[in-house]
Image (cartoon, rainbow, N blue to C red; front, top):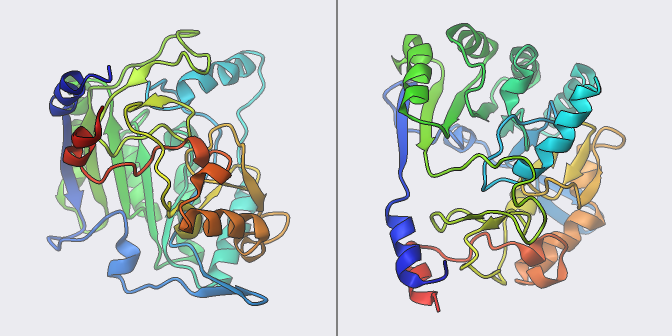
Length: 335
């Protein structure tokens, strides 16, 4: 569908809805980056002559599973192997409380109080029994940090939301990919925390332009379903066929300089796109966060990205994130 009229029509009718259900106060803040509003600046990490600011946010995978198969996400073809393993009574991979707490202690030692998101390439409420405890551990060691999760709302109840808020959750974005009936159900569960609740930002984000991919339906690389959306959607390092009209831009990407992404076993991954774990910079449990953040692997990615050389980097060489800054620019460049 690289015809300009077809793409334009698809963009114009891409229906999304963002509702603020609840907020701590009437003050206007960015719930994604509360740490900056609170006055925090990342400290400088040093290794020899190399200096780099510490990341401002970290995502941590507590369980290796998401229950949806959205066409814009690599999970639509990865999920089936994990389901088969579950049928064989092999449990999902999970991070232990001990390893998670070690990471929090390490962050405290580094003077970190940015954003902590206890989810990565998963659905955090697939770990709903343990999630309040993860939030509690985070606030125990990093009381001033911003704890935020994104969830598709699976299993979200009034009680669970209350437990998460009591544990110290600062913000939650609930992504609704189904219909108004599902949104209405979520709003009802969240009603006790609506308005100025004094504690937590609660946002409902609806996107009904997403398809749930059936098993073995165009799951092979090169045959995956095409998803056209706004210019802010991208192909996750080439793993999915999202906005194929947008070429890979030879420009910088801030992910390896501003965020750390930690898999359930402590591996520091390239970014939130790396669902196949192709680029591992090191392991923060076996060594330390500062050792990994300042190592040659991270430095190589930062240096080449700053020079606009995505073509020299695994994953990045296929990634069309940030291709255009607006829909107008995108439409002007469609051939």
